[in-house]
Image 1 (spheres, rainbow, N blue to C red):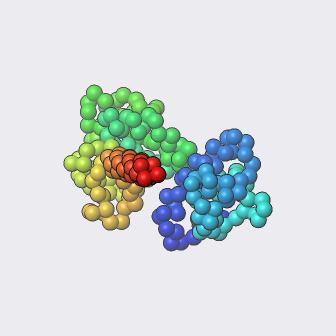
Image 2 (cartoon, rainbow, N blue to C red; image 1 turned 90 degrees about the horizontal axis):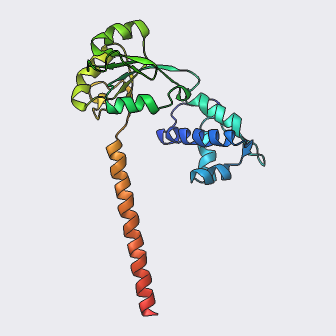
Image 3 (tube, rainbow, N blue to C red; image 1 turned 135 degrees about the vertical axis):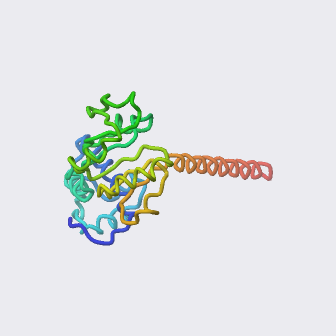
Length: 228
């Protein structure tokens, strides 16, 4: 399966879900799966699954479906998980510690090589087998170890100056929890912004919408019973 140019981000963002489901199937000993079975698990249509895979050349056999292990490996390759990216994490507060402690970086193609913070109480302590370093040593560390990626777990007000320092160190890839929009000042960076509050508000909308629909259904059912 060859990579192609101009793949839509909507397709790219579905690939990790495919990979997660296929990894679970492989662990369960499932050898092959049809596009319909995979679509049912992901709540897509079989046509959507086939279209997504066709973006990368498509594979699978009529009447046979997809080899789970092969498809998992192909998606792993497309996502670049075979090529570890060297990452530094900035901010070892509550959020940073949670990200460092609980995120399975290595299976996701990331090797955490450095953690930085200003807090003297944290400097020198070890988190995920990585010693937390003083922010003053950021430039020295980056020039020596050449990280590819910065994970920003700092407040928005601190992120602007921090991003200036990181950009000057030729770091162009970011996993950004700070709510600061790096692309405003640095349009050439590649960034994935994580807004947990946005996700929570989206959930609130879905809850409200679901409750409203159920209330409407209950009201309609009540009227039907009354009229009957």
